[in-house]
Length: 361
Image 1 (cartoon, rainbow, N blue to C red):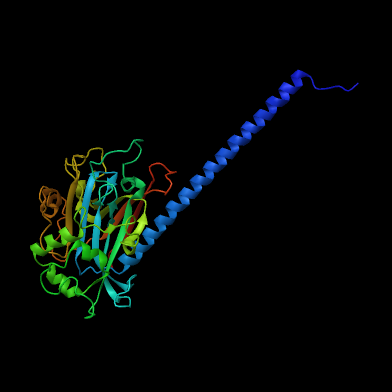
Image 2 (spheres, helix red, strand yellow):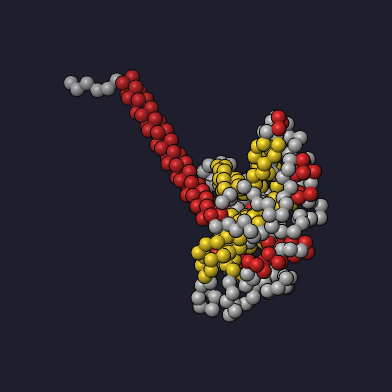
């Protein structure tokens, strides 16, 4: 007579099998999540290397005798949408062809900042952080995917300085900007027909400085306009990296700290001396009360004055900390802080990185 399994043995066997399957499923799930997280981190690090390598290359050749402009756009310390434009030496070649050939030169006007994008929902270019825009039914993302934090794009706009007379003049040469110096032309062309010496003349008057700010740094129209929806190739030459949710620029200055010691600080900062109080915030009490937009430029005349925004270069804060720019002054270093997201949103909140570029020769 053959002996079979008892009911208790069957129950125990089934229970053990269930435990093995459960543990195997858990291990499999953890392995998948670990692999997905590793892949997301690898994607973020790849974006980081692309950004920092390009910054290093561009700032290696920065011209300290040429205009440098920084435009600050802040609403809270964690999300900044700053912009910077400068001139640099190097070996530059356009990605597009003009009259059948690329433009080549050894001096360029270079811009970094987050791009505005074409919104199919609203039918015009917008900045992904603009408010107010309605939420969709899920409440997770904005009604337009271009407003999603992960969809924000860091742009690099390069204009090679050239004397090629066959190219359409942009902007028209001379001491003043012409009507052709528009945000649209600023995006479509990868060259300037003005020489560096002409740019220095252009930036010697306050009126022209305001035109530069309005053209190159204005919140929507002055930012690079990238269209991956209706015209997939428009703005492709300006795309640096996708998934950059925040881009902050600070410059180093020396100040006299307590005790008479000289130390270097980063401007602007919400807490420049690093103590517990933020009463000395470079943003004053305006942070978190709507868009705070202001700028500073070096080797250019005057300070930036825009309606309803502070003119930094003449502020008491700058004077008390000996940070007011003067003729011939140039920053010692620049610090870039950016928050990078992976394309699938696996790492919630992205990762924040800081990169310092030293400008002293």
